[in-house]
Each structure stands twice: as structure tokens, then as C-alpha cells.
Image 1 (tube, rainbow, N blue to C red):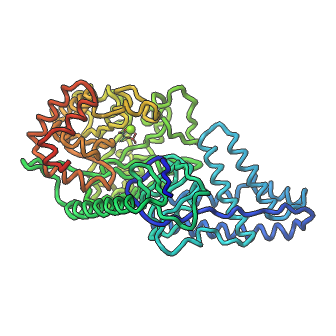
Image 2: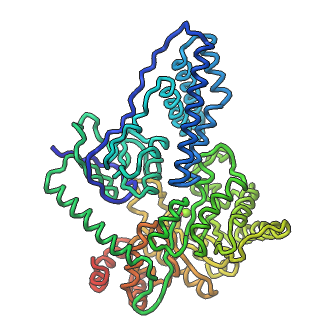
Length: 579
Ligand code: PEP
Ligand code: MG
């Protein structure tokens, strides 16, 4: 009998195949006493060394296959192995309780993880999972248990798990991973992030029941709808297979055209770029026809670590990306943390409204050195051909732009004094994601080379809708005429001063938005790599003049629903876009 489980979409696409239940065996640990501390300590030393070597292997493998930033988690795991408190607890267990090695380690892991769980900071609480992950690995080595991930089938499957830790996920041979589905985790969990960078569909928070599985049943995993369907009937299976074939066929055609420019029928060319967060994304972006990077989110470099990344830590990561992008433009957004992304070493205060609080560029009032250091690292990572475009997030006033510019000029001047080489193709811009920046775009344009509109936050702040609150998610539409007017003000203000405007919020990759954005005069669209072929094709079918009329009508409608209905029902558009 077929069964449907509704979870949360975490990575798009449809996977069809047999499921593989990833349930790492719950290793039974016997607690023994009266053991010889010296012998047990020697066993532990061997297991710690084996664990260290395995983590080193995982680090190298992930660095090669995915990227340095994603690999760094395994360096953090290696650090747990030499944590002095952890090792002291183990030694005390051996010497005072005469425990066996397995019990001494398990007890040490429990105290370490519980200590982290008791801390205020969410970051540290999340790290307790890493400690348990490392603990499992040490115990497996002590017991010489082969981790289940080594027993993965040698054929493609949809992997179902309670949760997947980073070390689980990267060990899967990606040729055999059709999709990932977990009972736990949110759309920003490790599973989701890795699935997206591997380009496989994923669903998280799917409330499936372990008892409902017989041997490797067939399933359909819909990463768009967030659905897992077990044992589908033959008609549903045929429909999903057809859908998958159609998606693939359409995608193949679109991808084959994706390296052509996005020029409208009346001859206006716009730039289509990618939003990326790693070197893996950069490679994917190029294969999908990206003409540059419209948003490199740099937060990943600062999260998941115990201390601020140094200039030397940052340079090779940026350089890898710049080398992949060669002479294509790369818009790099400087650190955008705070809000829902906090890091322990910066000392974020508890705030009643973190999204309206001390975040992103605002932090530089107290910590200008963070931005200064990042800018230096970015400049030093460039090659002579890099087309670097620095973008400052969360700007609300002209005085902030001036302050950012002072730090930027200082970084450039210092590197010149130090006679360090860097590219001479550099632009300086800001994100327009706070309504005040859109309203003052005309005046702000004097101080920047470009704007990029962040509609995710512009919608949040323009409509006062918390973007993380699922109860009011339906109110957060960038199609609201007020948001369209803010976009128009930004574009008009910049164009009046000869500056260009991009858009890097999710709206740029939404096919329904292409006409309006073209009509408003947007110069650059930036989106996740997989959306590029479709959006480029949409642009090539449209007439920019006709889009202006569409945009004018949309701006004067009453609310988001009217705009969406209007765009859906426009006959001329339907024909052109094949809706
Ligand atoms: C935005 O706000 O639209 C944006 C692109 O930035 P982020 O989603 O990273 O806040
Ligand atoms: Mg934003």
C-alpha cells in the first residue's frame, strides 16, 4: 500500500528508486570495571589515531569533491580528539573507575556533549552533535566495527535517515545517491546544504515511520513539494517517471542553450549570474551558463568554526573561486551574520529582534577590523584578470556607505604601500534590502558603482514580515506592488546616475517575475545555478518594451495576489512562456 509523508523541501528535483535505510547500527557498549588503565589507554591511543586518520581522509576527499569550506568541519572534528578536558575525563575514568576503553570514551563524550548542550549559545548547542559524531567514530574504531556507510549498496538509491551528520553525508558515493530524505533537520541543515551542492533532490523533516519499510521499497522523492511517497501505485509511478523524463528533457534543451546570451527579441541584453557559496557552486554555475557571480555569500567561512578566520585562512578559499570564474565578474558580499546566523567568537548579544538588530555591516561600528581583514583577503586573493565587485549588506544610510568606503579605501591603500599585487578591476556597491536604501537610491548612487537588490530581506523589511515565521509566510511576497515600487525606485535612481542594478534575492530565479523585472529595467539577474537556463530562455522570448507595459500595470494593482493573477493570466505572456 502506498504511503505519503509530507516534509520540507530542501533541494529541488524528483528522485525515483529503491530506498536505502541508513541506520548506523546502535553500537552496544558494555560498561566494564576492574580493567587495566594502562592497557585500555593504549587501545584508546590507537583508536584516536585511526579516527584522526579517517577524519584527515574525509577532509581531503571533501576538499577535492566539494570545497575547502565544506571540508573544514572535519578539521574541527579532529580538534575534538585533542581537547584537553575530554582527554582528562577519559583518563580519570580509566584511573578512578577502572573502566574499559569503550565506557571511558563514551562517558567522556557524554559529559563533553552535555556541557555544550547546557550553554546559552545555539552555536555551541549544535556542536554537541559534532562531539557525538566523533565519539561514535572512536567507539567504532575501538570495537573495530565497519561503519554502515561503507556498506552502502553499489547501485543508485534514495537514502533515508533519521538525520545525517556531515561525516555520514560526504562518505556516500555520490554516483549512488539519487536523493536524501531525513526525519529530522530543517532546510538549512547539513543534509540540505550538501544535497544542494551535490545537485540531488532532498526532503527534510519527513515524518516517515521506520516500521513501514519492507525490503528496499520503491519511492518517489519530490524535492520541490517536500514529499516522500513510498510504494506508489503503478499509475503514479508512471506519471512521476514521465514528469522526471520531461523535466530532464526540458532541462537538457535549456542547458544546451544556456551559454547563449540573454537578449530579448527587441535586442536588450541583460546579465544572468549565479548565487554561490562554494567553489563547487562556482563550477556548477559555469556549466549552467552563468555569466558571472551576482552573489557570493561569504558567511560559510565564518560559521562552523571556533575562531575568526584569518587573512591566510580566507585567501585560498576566495582564490579558488576567482580562478574558476576567470575574468567573469564576481560580486562578493562581505560578511552578513547576525539575525539568525550568529558566531560564538564575535559575542552576539541576546536581542529581542535580531533581524532588526546588530547584524552585517552594523557590526563594523564596533569591529571595523573584521571588514578590513576580509577586504584585504579578497583583494589579495584576486588574480590580474579578476573582475571583483565588493558588495556591502544591510546598508540603511549614506553615512554607512561612506564608512564602508573608508575601510575599503584603507585596505587598498595599505596593500599598495605593502606593494602586494591585486586586480585593478574593482567595483564597490551595496545591497538594497532595507526600504530606506531603495527610497534614497538616487542620492546613494553617487557613492557606489552598483546596487544589488536583496528581495528576500527587502520584502521582510518592506512588509514587516519575519521571513523565518512560517505562520505569516504567505504575506511575504515580493510581488506586492509596494515592493515592486521599491525595486523601481532603486533602478530609476541608479540609472539616473549611470549606475547598474542587479537583483540577487530568490525573486530573480522565479519565472513569474522575469517580465516585471525586465520591464522595470533590471540590468543583472542573479540566482541559484539550476534556475539559470530557464530564466535565460524566458528573457530571450520576451520583448522588453512589452514588459514595460506589463510592469506599469503591475505597479498599479492593489496587492500581491492581483499582480500574481495578472501575470499568470496575461494571454500574450502565456503564449510566449509556454505556461
Ligand atoms: C536577500 O536578502 O535577498 C539576499 C539575497 O540575501 P540573504 O537571503 O542572504 O539575506
Ligand atoms: Mg539579505
